[in-house]
Image (cartoon, rainbow, N blue to C red; front, top):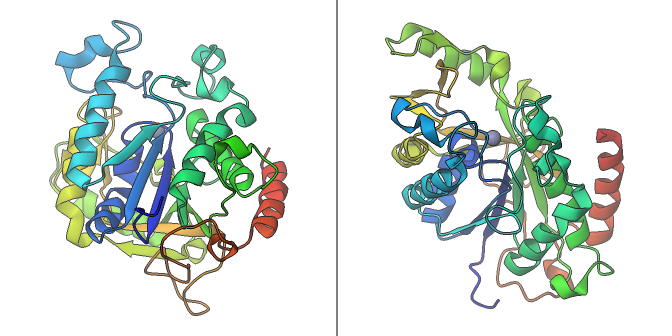
Length: 324
Ligand SMILES: [Zn+2]
């Protein structure tokens, strides 16, 4: 534990590829700056659609081997971002991709969406208590765009943060630890609009253009509280996205998912602070997710429990209830 880097960032995502699309530049930048970047992915993405025709046989309705293939894509993407600590929640294959909202796979035994939050959260509590991150990044309560695994990843992340700080919860999973700051992935509407204007003006090969409301996490600019300039890591982010070749087609500063609809690839990434205290002056966006946190070797003392276990726990419980 004394070997942990001073700054530690934890990201919780639903499927392999979500991390590179949402946070690739942020991850590459903090990893390059010496922070510990830990990625926890909740499923293998077994239900994803496959873009390259030559790999179509991997899909769930054919060979059903997409999960293993995407595990390899994720490892390659992490190499591009310089991130060495990537894990699957509960171990690879513990929870299965639930598919899009409303499909029969939602109710399959072992599907992530079909798993009680309190059954999945302890696996993340163990990670939180061992890595002791000052900062957690996950989705907003709608999972960005309503995919059941994204909604569930949000719920599990928020619940695990609360439980990890609770001294009465499962001492076998490590010493209690309160995460100082929790962020949700966001895109300011003005940035999305500008990105789509660029896309429409450009000569790209995608058959269509996505709708702005299909972009996960788009909100009014005022709700965005932090922006991380990862423009110096644009190449790493694009390379990480390319590594997810079954899921993403990249064309310059644009990309498309399996729906073939182009969308902008952002190298400045945006966040909303959902728990903890902003390190920026009032009315300004933070430019560093660690701003205002106590960084250093985690020893388990009261000085390292961030914003305070009791306060966080209370807030999290309240929010959790209103979200359901
Ligand atoms: Zn996803």
